[in-house]
Length: 215
Image (cartoon, rainbow, N blue to C red; front, side, top):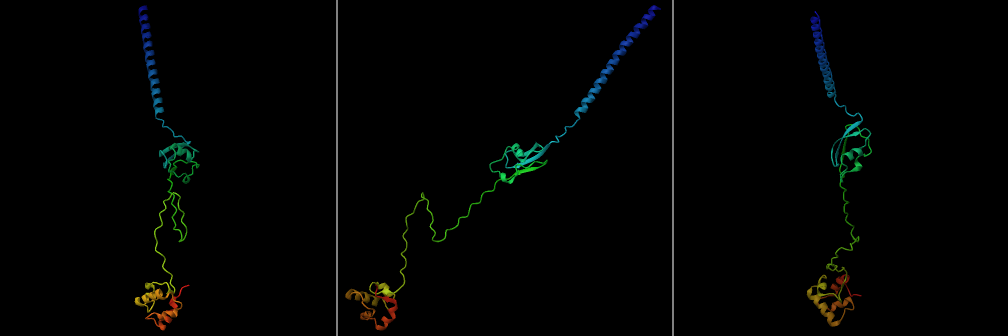
């Protein structure tokens, strides 16, 4: 009977060991299961955007156009700096560099417009034109002599052609007037023309307003 009791005791001991081992395995599996679920929950959490940031687009005359994120309260100058700064052709007067940024703002930096050249106006007639000291000065070109002023013809100095232009005086009589001057000297009076062959007193009266003896 003592052997029987001893066998029962051994069986209970084995069962207790097995039961404890199974309980440990179950607890370990349960712990691992909980840990895996917690990791899964953490991985599924989506990142939350920074509520203190704004996104703006910077383009135009900047080195690196694109979309940039800045903290709220930043100014246009900060966004331009992030975009690499202004290009030489940028017109800074066309944008407000000190303006505060808002989310989704678009900052387009324009290029400067070319400065219009002043129109060249012609100087009035008679206005002296300044000459650069380094400029090449061209020699004066010959000009036509001014036309002779119209007036009475000096019969003591006029040529045959000038006398020929007088009304009623042809080249023949004009030659006689010149020949008379050479023979008798200058005319002393207009009436002396009557001594020239072919000239009458009436012709002298008609020519009187057109001729003179000179000074």
